[in-house]
Length: 230
Ligand SMILES: [Zn+2]
Image 1 (cartoon, rainbow, N blue to C red):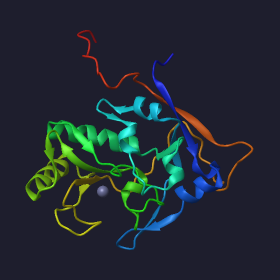
Image 2 (image 1 turned 45 degrees about the vertical axis):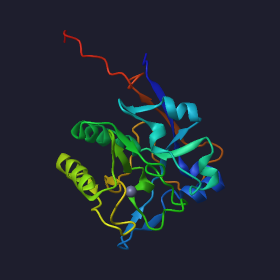
Image 3 (image 1 turned 90 degrees about the vertical axis):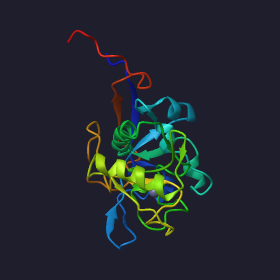
């Protein structure tokens, strides 16, 4: 009955050895302050570049915008099907609110969305490995590389909700920023309602665990005006 699209959700323990070794589902990693965090287990499987372009997470953000990486990502993870933690949809929702508050389009940098634990920029755990961080390099026509604009948009993001953290302006890689706005929601993991959680943290090759998440709107690009009737 739904006119939406569906996205396949996989339990990363059921992916092949190479993918499992790159995505490290359920493994503990340490952040720059030596705190430990458990990596996500449930991922959207993106079958093709066209699918990544077509899947809208919100009216103004497509899934493709969160998976743009350069050669610093592991080669296997640059191939389709691609994998992105399910929490990316929560990030997209917050970015949509941020876009409205900023009053202009929000452009995510290459390597500025999801980065796997195998990505060469992934020295310590950051929410980028959870799909819950975005590096924004441009808002409307404004390139974010000066202290005044970075501080202005950090303020816009932090005024929106305590759920968002930004990095202050500065030149220390990993904790400050001087050529983008970093915005994250912390280490959120999402277990989609469609999948059945399983205690077995080993591959289930004979019966791989997956589900399909229905996206309710067919075209989030063009939100229709609400009807005058209710
Ligand atoms: Zn960042």
